[in-house]
Structures are given as structure tokens and as C-alpha cells.
Length: 205
Image (tube, rainbow, N blue to C red; front, side, top):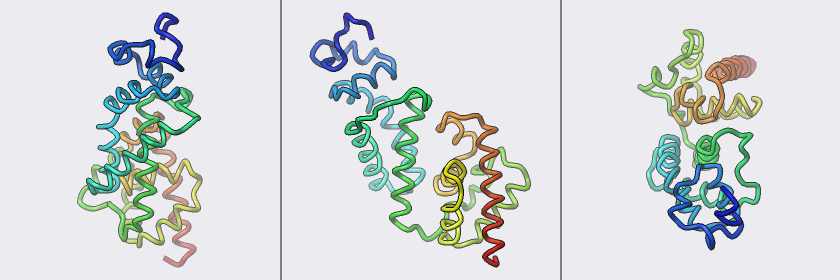
């Protein structure tokens, strides 16, 4: 944003709605960070639909997905930290916040089963045959045992597995949402599955 557009902290007083709508995402987030209500409305219009799609795919219920989306965007509005471009694109950052809120909602609801069903092949696209075999083993376990195993994984590994099995996202979708190479997602998935297999083996499964 140029100086003639005004001080971002008072942007809604000096920048017109049309000017705000033409801002790039990162510039827009500067105004959102300074609690500009017009900028936040534009921000929501840009990313709300994608956020709802992520929430709905994870929680599987429209009212709950709407609640998750509202919580996520309110947390962005209230947060003092704001957007950090080091975390990737604004879209990836927003969807990451929605994803984490949705996963928390699923955990609170204590879902009795994982969401792998007839769509296993789509969920596990790009996976090697060994990972598909491991997924079949995991699917037969109870949600409680799997959640316990996930809790013991490093966060970067548990995140990709939660997105795959709670959310039903493919590895390529996870890579896009988290702003990381597909190979990194594959590697974290593989390592996570290997550790879960070891955990279940130790438990006598």
C-alpha cells in the first residue's frame, strides 16, 4: 500500500472500499491487523467460502462447519499476532487456522470412528502400496487407540495424518493447504504411519 493510500492503522478512514478491494492479500492483512472493518469484510469474502469447505469436509455437519468458520475468523480478527508471510500465503494461513479449529471440534465431539470409508483411494492418492496397506490396518483400529497413538507423534507428523484421516484430504491437497512440497507431506505421512504401527504393535495389536 502506498503512502497516499493512508496510514494502515486508520485505513478505513482514508482508503475507499474500492481501493481496499483491489489490495493484494498481504496488504489487505495489514489493514485487518489494524482492525479495519471494511478490510475484514473483504478478507472474509475472499477466503470464507474456501474456509467453510475445509471445515465442512472435516466435521461433516453444516451447522458445526459454520460455527468452526466463525470461530476461526473471529480468532483472526481478535489476534494481535496477525499474518506472518513466513508461514506461506494468506490463503494457506487462513485454511490452516480453520483446519485446526475443525480438528479441535471433531476431538471435542469424540467422533467414534475415523472418516476413512469407500473413498480410501481418493484420500490416499499419491501413497505408495505400503502406505495403503498400513492404512487398511489403521482403519480397523478404534478411534481411541488411534488418537492415543497420534498424540505421541511429533506435531508435524500428526497434522498431516489428522488432515488425511479426520478430514479426508489427499496428500496433494494437504501440501497445497499447508504450503509445503508434496514430498514433505509424503515423508511425514510415511514416518507417522511407521511410528503408529510400532505403537500398536507394542500395545499387542
